[in-house]
Amino acid sequence: MNKSSVGDSANHPSGQAAVALLNEETLDAIQWNLLWEQWRPVTPLARAQKNRLQPFLPGDEQRWQGTYHLLQSDVHLLSTVFLKEVRETLREMPDVREILQRLWNMGAAASAGIGMTQHLSARDMLVLKQFAVYGQRLAAKLAGQMCGVSDEALWAGLLRPFGHPDEPSFAVQHIATSEYDEAAKAYSQVLHRRSEAIRKWSNHWQERLGVRPGRDGVIVCKLPGQAQLAARLKETPEVTWQSDTPYESTFAVPPSLEMAGLQREIEGWQQTMDAQAEGILHRLTEQLLDVYDQWDEAVRQTIEVDLRAAKVVLWHQWGGCTPTPADVLSVTDAVHPLLAEKMAQQSRAYTPLTWSPEEGVNILTGLNMGGKTLSVRLLVTCQVCAQYGLPVPAQACSTRLYGAIRLYAAAAAPAESGLSSFGAEVLQMRDSLTGIENARQPVFHCFDEPAKSTNPAEGEALVVGLIESLQAAAPKHHLVVVTTHFSGAMRLRDIPKFRVRGLKNVNLPVAGDNEEFQEDTQVLQQRLRLLAEAMDYRLEPVQSTELAQEGLRVASWLGLPKSVLQKSQRYLVEAAGTRNLRGNQR
Image (cartoon, rainbow, N blue to C red; front, side, top):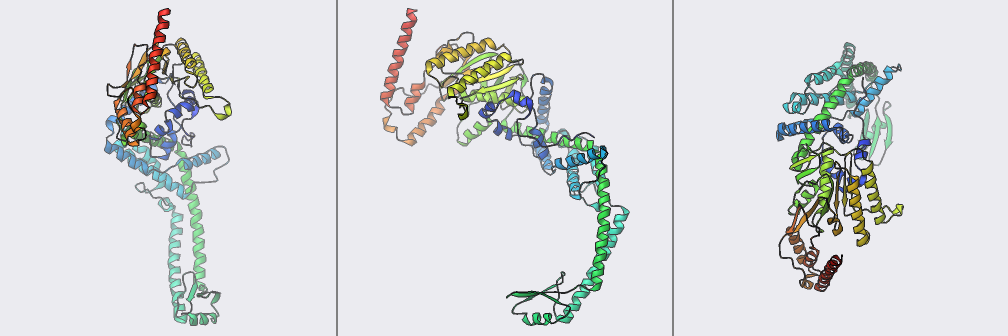
């Protein structure tokens, strides 16, 4: 007998593999818990197993691709009708984890020489039988067979010891011995005789007092309407007065001698039946222990069919794909499921992400509000989905397995650490460099605007130093993405650079007279909507070493006063002239 594999588990992600692949900051940044919840198996068994699943890591490529080949087949074979049929049957299957665990413990005790002094209850047997009945029905369905529940004989064998295999109900009578049947027959006959004795006893008191006691022998006289009857009962020797209230009087009438004798007989037969039932349940428990491995296999099949069906549902919900093996991550028309749903509710268009970064270090730049943060987070999300064997929310994806995935977003240092935000960013840079230098497997690291919490001059210097160090530390099989606004990073050589396309060629003024609508919320909301429509969120590779300057146009469009904009524009011109002069002097 093997140890059951259906125990409870901790919350996802769990296990050393998950901890090695991801950290809490990365999971929080991509809202992984919310995405994980959208994969919804319907049985408690599969939900528990889902939370024990480990990500695929380098070295798991064969199993990883096998998982996706199976998903592709399921998507092809499982129609909407089949999925509904499978999941409706699965919902009927009860949770048998705790019962099977107790059964295994009983078997372990018996194997240790302690002896099996306990057995499963009739209620336990009912739950197990219901599980097996619906499992057999699933195995008989074409849809269930397509999902992995293919052995009807297994389920038929599990049902056989319970009797009445076509019914989801269970009673000891279904598998009773002749001794139990004889006791049950005698018990039924005595019950009938007692009913007849009660009828005669009730008629006797009706004739004598004009009132029938209840089956429990109690007479209740409502006051004041039955005050005379209550007075007469108090004078009747066989009747026992119990209590008086302003509203009623109660009396107890003793059972007849025949009734008392029949009750003792009933209790005797009940004890005989209980003893027989104990033996029957004990023997049935032993029978179930003999086929415990088959129960474990039935649980495994149930988990598999549920997880696979739920994954197909998620595929359709996300419009997903299966990744193909490649040297570096690439996505086509990727969509973040949570954000796309939110924007659809707001009647806003969503621009899918198509991006093929190169091996090594990549730089992504572009206007604020242009989607850089969303792009790197979506890229990380697609990779995490791929390493958990889930549908990737994209039209196409190619990638490899990475040993660690890190997204270093805006750092908020814990108060107890004594660090500033800048201090937390420095630790992020240190940890990334250390992780890449010590990595024995390919890693995927993303930095979202590092060093933005210090002054611009030193921040730019730190970003340039970080990128150059990453470039030196990261062999080609690593993937690193850095988003930044610092122009110094764009002047680095031999590093692939990408930008969000930014503003389309629309009429957004640079220094208009905005004072007239600064306090008009409706106008501002309209301009925010038009600004979103004017943004082109697609990514493209760039060769330029300078950053596109679109911030003043956006500031003007959103109502920054003309005086501020004019001074800002003058500063930009003077700063550009100073840079050109220094360049000529060099």
